[in-house]
Length: 88
Image 1 (cartoon, rainbow, N blue to C red):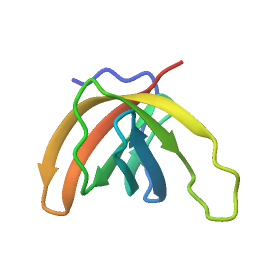
Image 2: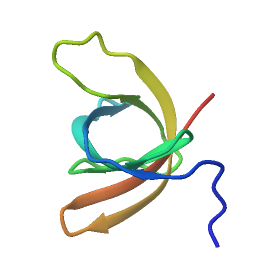
Image 3: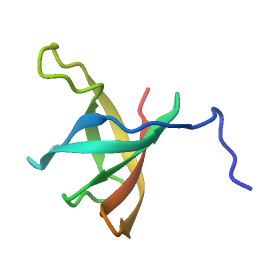
Image 4: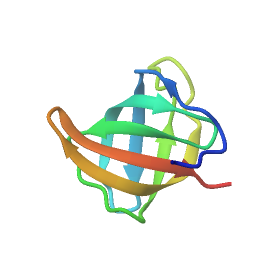
């Protein structure tokens, strides 16, 4: 069984994700929790990469970035899925 500190909410919303090498995308969440989230993107990130998530991503809001780490990746029918945990 998967051990999770907090339960996941199935939630689809836009987020901005980027890494330190200039890869940036407006991606979409699949689920979120207090500790991290799953998102789908067309871009390639590496497991272990530090990434920066801005969410909820709204055009009229000042973005606040949250550092996270990509902890798993898999290819899906509608894009590349990544699991990310927030870095405290």
